[in-house]
Length: 273
Image (cartoon, rainbow, N blue to C red; front, side):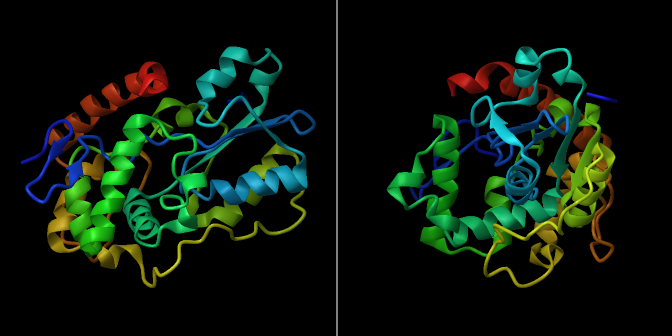
C-alpha cells in the first residue's frame, strides 16, 4: 500500500427473535479484488456501491477476486508478497443514515430473493449473521413496519463497520454519495484512464425519497446516539433539517468501547460464528 435494550438473543412477547448485535457488525466484504497489471487492490464494504465497482474492475480492468468471500484486508496482507503490499488500495464508505434506509428496503422487498430463494438464502452466511438477518426479515415481513419502527427495534447499540479495521490506512476511500466521480478519481490515481462512466447496478427498488425524511424525531434522537460517533469519524453530518445536537461525550465513549470489541470480533472470532 502506498500511503431498555434486549441483551443476548431474546424473545419478545410477539415471539420474534431480536439480535443483540446491530446490523453492521456481522457484515463483511464480499471480495478482495486485485490487478497485478495495474497494481491495485479493491476491498469491498457492503452497500457502498461495491457490486458495481467489483463488476467494472473485473470486466473492464482485468481484476480478479482472491482469497475467499468475506475475507478481510488483514488476511490479504498475511499472504501477500512484499510487492503486492505496495499496491494501491481503495474501498468505499457510506453515510450510515442512508445505509440503514437501504437495508430496510432491501429486506422489505426481499432484494434479489436473497432470503426466500433456497439457493441463495443460506449461501456463505454464518450463524450469527443468519440469526440477526432472519430476525429483521421476519419482523419486516410480518409487521410491515415503517422505517423508523424498524430502526428503533434493531439499531440500539453503537454502529460500526469493519471500515474501522483498515480504511484509514487505504490510499483512497470512495464515498457512496459521489460514487461515479470518486471511482473515476481512484482509477486516475492508479494511472488508469476510465473507459466509461461507472454503470448503476443493484439499485434498491421502491425507495422514493431522500433518506433523511424516513426518520421520525424519536428515530433522529436514536441516530444521534448510535450513528453519530461513526458519522463524525468519517466526516458525515446530520441533515440541517433535523433538530439534533452532535453526539455527546458519553455517546463517543460508548462507540469507542463498542468499536474495540467489534474489531476483536472481526479479527479473531468471526470465523467461528
